Length: 311
Image 1 (cartoon, rainbow, N blue to C red):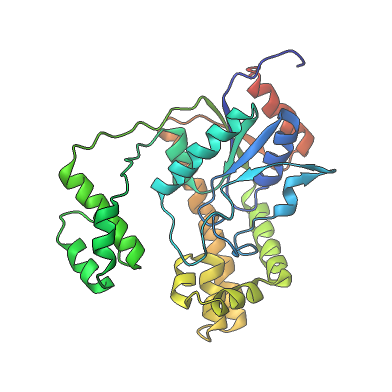
Image 2: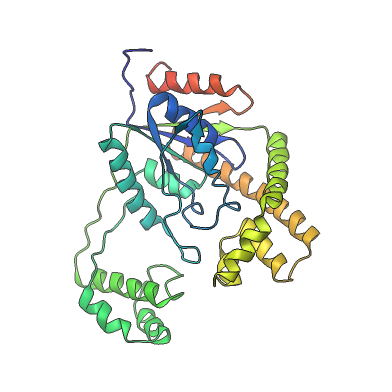
């Protein structure tokens, strides 16, 4: 395919947990001269490594390191939303393009993926320094009362901290005083590839990976996060590994109940991921599925042919 031109501006690699999409995205990045942009709602958090499956070692092959973006960009304990992801994704995407590399979005967080592929709209609200200075003097309870006076709250987590409450009030004030024009998120010409894996094989992989993560120190990771000042309820909010392991560490679950409950929860999560991706197809997103059992080199060649328009 030497001399051929890539027909797409971006490649997206999607699929359920434990399907092997990260390793595939890295191989494609090496073969096509790309950089990976993560679309994972939990890998943004610093210090949450084992439980989110960052697998940073995956991004190196034979001495070649593939750049990865939107990993480790938010402090653990904070909350990250779709608007922030779109903002950060667009900045990462433009940076990759400026380096004349191919952006490869990779992830299993369906809403994040679809927000990019279908060009969900975001509404940029500028900072209001004077308002922030006035609100900073108020307590969280006072800020919550102010926020509740608006008809529509920005989202249901706005009163977690003073910082979030102030930002939510800032947004509501902007909406009330300014005619809001939605900024269209650019529609990016994207080849979307999904990695399909047999259900029973997926179950086996999930179980094996969970046991491996426990051996690698998942419990110790959660203990460290708790010791750093993050509350149990903050960790439980993140769900899956952090929910169940935190409940074990704080004495709410036995070790065996933790493992069993977590295994079931991850299986259910993988099923929901696939339901979302099937829904994306019904909503008009074309996903080219490749079989996870196929040798990786064959997967790469098939996807490269699609990238060059040789369907």
